[in-house]
Image (tube, rainbow, N blue to C red):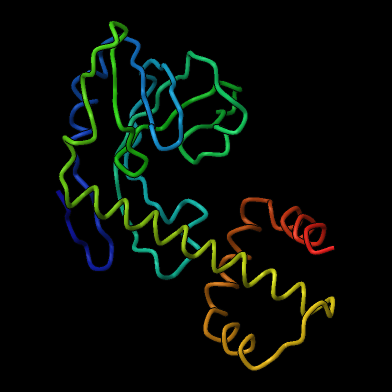
Length: 204
């Protein structure tokens, strides 16, 4: 269910309600994100209230609506691949414990118990909630693609690899805002320098 507060949208969702009924249980749950090929097992650690997507790096993009959501943090008990730690919803806390933030904003496809029974799936989410979240992540990916192209053009023009013709100038002007916001986004992640070096190597 969506609630509007001016330009901000808060999501009151089925996943949060489902997990709220299990926060006192010491059970281990398996969370599955099929599209990311991620499976983790975790135990409830703590509740996480008043979260906003603007707190993440994508908050640098002006064309992303601000979404508020609640969630739960689970201590991860299973093996975690290094690349999974690049996901916004999996990380290490100050004590080095790997945790997963379970919320509608990064909703799993399925939750299973240790008997391998599906006890929740994303079809139970309100369709309007899912569409808002999916559309938001799709827009973020579109912004990133535009930003990558913008950065490539900047580097090629600077290094005189290409001529700045009228078509390129027009594209750069049209996408300048998103391009600059993408650079801020990369910088906030500490990845700007690495991305520039990578593009330089690919352009050689």
